[in-house]
Image (tube, rainbow, N blue to C red; front, side, top):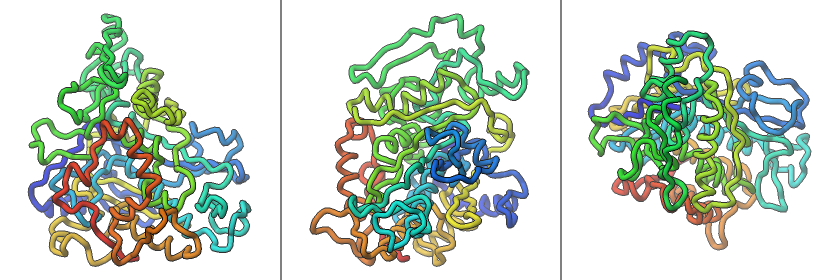
Length: 485
């Protein structure tokens, strides 16, 4: 995740920078960067676990999902999505055509990749499967059709876990630093550097003892206002939506970070990763479109945070991702298992000198998986310049120029699934039908009335959340586009 550089400057067409980045980043056939210039200060893995499988997981799968779930010690594990990134676009770069990826933080990209993975599994599922739970009648070992519930469900034992290399930006990044994070060496200088990188200030066990750490205040709603001594806190660069809140108030909803000298109209309007993960834990990370196919919300069973930050970090992540939602009145918010890994990501920002705008994406949507480089500053797939996008009216002629996680690409997968399973009714209200040539992305999302109802009923979301489609950029005709398969 990226607390340090969520810039959204909107001036210039960026062609010179795009050319420079093309010279710096080249990917060979195996998907490896020939020069390590992708933005590796934040990384996220989504792994799936299945107790019904007997094959052993690869080393990379088992290590990245070491905290994953209660599927059992013998459960097979595999990585299904990987993303790096710490950038996001500013308001001036948001588009009305679903091509620009507004948020390129690792957790968000990885979750969008998970959605793509589920779409591809739905496309694999056999039309003849019916309500059978046997995997022999379907090419998907992840989902199956449940005729009684009128939707696709995960197969027995399938769980998804998320690993992030550092605490998610926003509320989860505010925690007591009295206990030093684990490091791969014993040098005090390295620990000090990590404190400066993550917290914006230096803290040691000795300095932490100077205060009792109990200078705390609780707001009337129980979700904001708690404070600690500033020198003891790891802090976030994310900015509170309501300016009345200071930088270290707990439970506050925030926009992602931006340079302090940036004009407000150029700053990012993306909510922090802590807030998005909290929303996904309540409503499911499948989003509105997938909820038209899935019988149940798709949630992470566990989240593991790298870097060995200890119990205070674990408590902060739990508070940010579900406890504050319960405190706000969403009592049905499920508890999320959180663990802290002692492993430090080898390419973390504190250990690397470069902080590149490129994000590396990989998803297991076919035999070899799909790899993509995404320019997080512009929200565009590598090779597509903003000037070229503008020339073609905001929509590239070739679908191969669309990012695999942009809204337009995922909307196209939605219509492919509708075409693949014409006999399986969408979970639509009575009297509502969708047309590929007429229904816009926003209209399709609004048709998921069960999902929208749960979102509107959330006390946490209704009170604090900022929706880009209605509150940030209504002049863009936001999400009012159709697409082709």
